[in-house]
Length: 466
Image (spheres, rainbow, N blue to C red):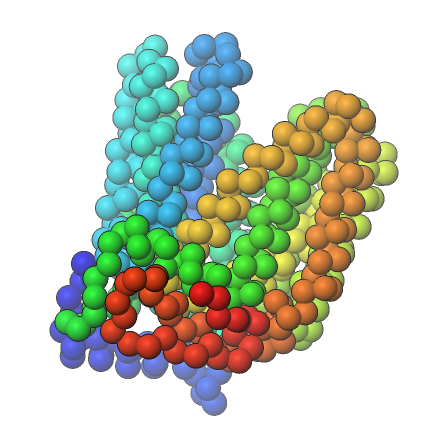
């Protein structure tokens, strides 16, 4: 259940938010002056750094402990499967129980799991099955937490600054990825158990930062006259809401395919650098250049949306990404591959900022956890196809040909943006003025207390689908 707060406390909190976030002449101050946002941003950043460290350490541990690449891959897959298994449940929980409680308790489960891994490794000769089980537990907990992130961000950030907050989160994660891998290698070289203890401590920071956030995180409490449905029905309601918006349906499918193609390029990039005579150092340099591009894209994304409009940013970025695919197959030197990938990442991050920002504005707070979790499920459920297909193509046809085939696939995705005018019509509306979608109608045979509201015009090109 959501936390019960006295009415006078909630009113003072709202007035405090107004004083903090509204400057002279209605202009919003920087997000870095938003105390709640700073707690949220820093807590998640430290946790992401810890996860990045352990993500490198887990396969290293299994590879050196067992000598088996299969075991190294298995422990990564178990974590991914655990996360996928609880994504939908986590999204539904985020819309029916206290989000603050989820943010405080679930990271502690992850912390205990990682601390247990550190203890097993510290004692020497850790059991493989035990490590696999703990990786699965960590993944299950991570899935429960995913659905909370988007609705909490919407609660603590003014609607005019959602795009900026989304971009800053992406930029933070890019920097963390840049730092996390070498830090993980350094900590692992000091002692094999240290990366896992580091990750365990990092999860505690999410709990602490969530406790210090002053704004109510929701969800809003049910009134006495509202019906309470089961968890399974809540998950179905999230899907019904997505089906009511042409924008959400289109971007869910398009984004999942884009992510699949991008994952394939990630594998081919390493193969291509090696094919051009590069080694681990060159791979690291090229990766760093790509990450720098992502940070630049995150900084530029909100400004581009304001000056050019969301639709133009999406179209332009998609075609720049296509061009980067084609050029990267032709340049001869590893450092040139890195520069091309940097240009590609500069374009890709604004695409993500546009898609995610409009999703946050369209979806009502009561459904945001379920919708965000559903999006993540589709993105992650399909992403394994990209590296597999890319590897098969590279072995059969050569790495350059494989990259060009992915470029053609990306070009087809870019072309669909030009044909989806109705589905993307909401992008012509300034982000702060986008109307929320109405709640979906109840399932057949389920009584409703109120009639569903009509779909507002331009709400993602929405059509009522029953």
